[in-house]
Image 1 (spheres, one colour):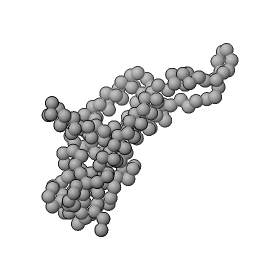
Image 2: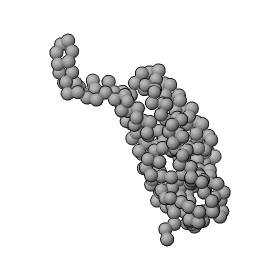
Image 3: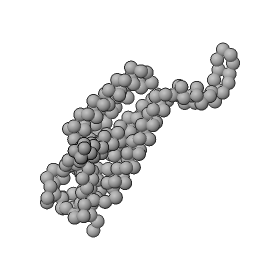
Image 4: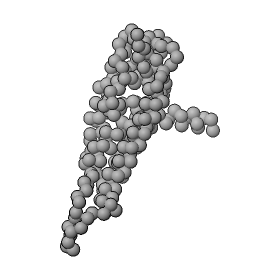
Length: 201
């Protein structure tokens, strides 16, 4: 039981990060599929007001996408509260680093943009989109590259591969611009993936 709890604790932030990364896709698909309300509709029997139930029946997929956007926002709030409030007790000096922000663009271009072609308002399109997202998520989580996250890039976060005096080649997510010689307060998210705050002078 304790082993299961430990695995779930390790898996949870990865899944949440993956859902956050899909926020951009959910947003684009929402506006690609939503039927905007019109005040009246006309048919053979004349014209009348469009009911809420009628509007909802035309927007099942957009409503699901909207709920997924809300879920991504909830996970983002959890991340912001849990990790961005502080780091380790002892600052660590950055001895080398590599900027990995280009990987966010790679994820966006390679995985997210092509998925816009799916039509989740149709059953086959919804199933194919779901299966594709599950497969991509499984790959990203099991290869520990869940941090490739265009949503975080939009929100102003940077990704570095950092070595410090005590650790080697950890991936660091931070709001700060880092350079060699800076001191950071890292906080573990997953294996070799940390959130970090830069020490202020």
